[in-house]
Image 1: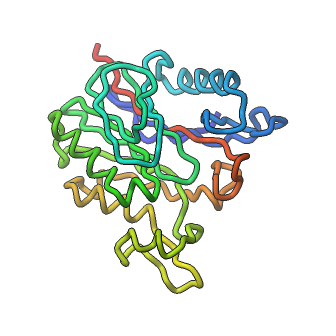
Image 2: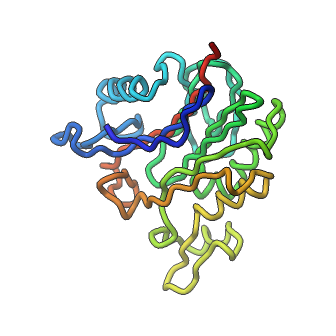
Length: 244
């Protein structure tokens, strides 16, 4: 089972699942689909989630994720489970994992190992434009994190080359991140998310930006833009490991 291993230290583990199309190749959604908001059978998805989380060292019974709504609600959590209408999660609870689901949007994982704080947020274009990234960093700061000590991971997501949008979307972003050389505008979501982190005081050298494009690479990634309702979901998960 292939996945992106961003970080694995004594205190933090951060990973991102890949499509793995050979898994259950005969199903309506082949591969490692970890999302409920698909045409996949929920019991099958539950089993895949459990297998995946155990494979990457996370406890399925100690994992929290938000019911994502492309908003900017960020919650501080101490327990596992589904958090309603939430796109960002922060915790200081040892042993707890935080999960984010994507299929073109960016998943952002963050940690301040010295302060013992981790976070995860879902940065689609709506959430990113409305400030989900700085709001997540600010909540980490509220609980004792220092941006200068933070590390971050930006997952594979839709690239500028494939993110064609209408003017109503392009206008939500500074022109620096909009390419108007084509018939319709294209937005650079990755660069915007990256700069949002830098603007909050996180050192650029401590930000891992994955170059993968969810639309362009059908073998490694699910993409709602490419596959529509037949698209699965990938998961980014970060765990604050228990001490001792």
